[in-house]
Image (cartoon, rainbow, N blue to C red):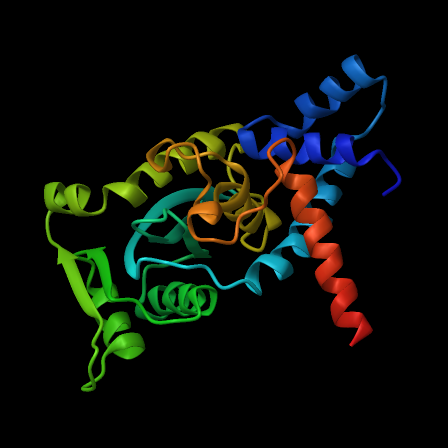
Length: 246
């Protein structure tokens, strides 16, 4: 790190809390006397999200096995795209966030596949709205004649969907607030989506979990109380060094 770790982790934390890159740059200049261009801040995000993401994806969270899935519209390069979120109900652990241009079966399958890779196991139940793509994708990814079987809970109608999917609906609201600051995504492969997933799981305290993070509730949280971003970076570097040694 060319800059003090505190500066980098403050920048990451402010950004995923909803502060724009230009405002973070101004903050660092006013309070730390540092002239850091907003493009440099964006490169930090890409670098450390990639590093931490590899570490986080290697962990095995302890989950309830009851998944809630929902999709929402976002702006990307001036067009509308779909963001698919898969969350474990009891731990509030965000298993997958994927972006697609359409709401086809393969798009829903992609979200399910990423969630399975993160969970390292298949779910007990999967709750979705009544979108047909979910039904077809569920059959392809989870259907089996062997027990135990995964149950698909389809919530037809707006009221039923909101009632049964309220945990992921609240997440969607948080994402919408963040997206307003960004004024839409710049591209579909942005590191911002993965970065928000990491922030939500490992750094953001959840009131529904009595102040714990979803990662802590899932048994894979960082023990640092003061700077969870720094704790994540250190754990990621240790993991990478260990892999290189072997």
